[in-house]
Length: 171
Length: 400
Image 1 (cartoon, rainbow over the protein chains, first blue to last red):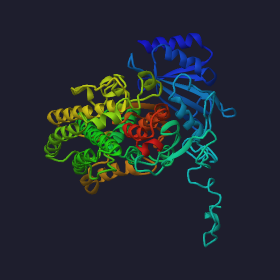
Image 2: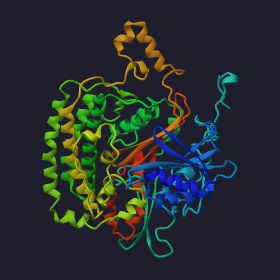
Image 3: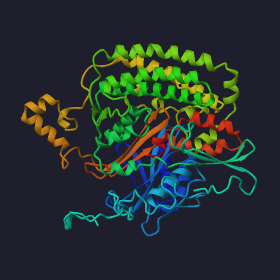
């Protein structure tokens, strides 16, 4: 099987970068440090995982993990018909990770989306601007500490002081 | 955002703003094109006009509630979205639905594919000026939507699947209604092909327009008809079969040139294959349950049980109460499915709670659209409409 071989290659060559290899529901997940994401994905690409099916991120604030954010790459091999998930962990105080736009052009827009919604900066990205939200938008909505009820992003709402009891007031 | 202060930029080229509300964009997309005469020198797509935070919403809704949100992503084939999401959630919970449910899901997916492709071809044609094709296609689509209405109760917001089964079984004699519609598919396709396949104008407008090479298609992550029109032999239904697709016999349609005409050809032939699958499903439809064993406490019990027995009532509350419900193991799952536009998958991360920790959609429209400026630059302005039509971009899925 090509996948096991590739994972063992990655483990051999970047033993300090691979944090863990886990399995869930029959899928292999390779956990790596963010700094070596380009090298690791290059090996995967060279060994047949030619297609970046999906790129996204997860905020591990309450989930737990090696770092605050993980950038998730779903790779697919057209030749071997295998899939693998690579998770690169990004620290909270310095949310930067190298861009993989050089390996797959599809990373361009998906990295922009992750930058927009999570605030993770992709170094070496040719055009890292917001894609879903307007450019002057403040905050990164998919972070777990971003409020879901719309309290902070609309501070310009006129507050009507009417018969709401003090403790139920929103502001 | 690009500033549109002057019609003429410093280079003497004209800036043309296409969209976000334009009859040929079929949704709210915007493309800013820099024109030199009639040639597009540089195009910058701008998206996000329909961004509604579906992924954030998913963190607050439980596994069955989120199915209603998936309807609103690709609103031309909502059943495919329902199925894709249910499959991913089921993989997370490590359950497998009964064969009858799998077959019904396949039937619904393939009917959706016919409806989606026929509308896509119609829209592409009406943008180029062939209005009749659009009318032929729309009549058939209407018939298919009637089938959806019979089975799910609604035409658009179907919400038909549930984690662990389906909302309800298909009604009696549904198969006859399906066959009646399938009999028309070939006729409509023949009508469309007679109009277009040997049409000089259609050829001039679509051949060698918007060519995508095989390497570009892989690099840009294209999937579905767009990838297959560029010669990539990849169909998830065949390569990584899900929901009993391996039981059915059909061909993967590929074309080699990767232009607008080939994408049209791939779509028309895929409709024929879908029709073939539908007939096989109808013939081999197994009997039995559509939901997994009620002891798993995934599915709502039948209404008679809820109203007439205390066990049924407790069962009902066990599922619907806010602090109860299904509890998946902590983990993550991603199931790729072949939606009409390409690879559609839901990446669900769970921390063991009753709502997902994170739901990410792998939207085929979004990823297919990212190649736009690559293929648009250097083309004529009038070809922009043909290219956009051939991509079948659904704004709801593009922006989510």
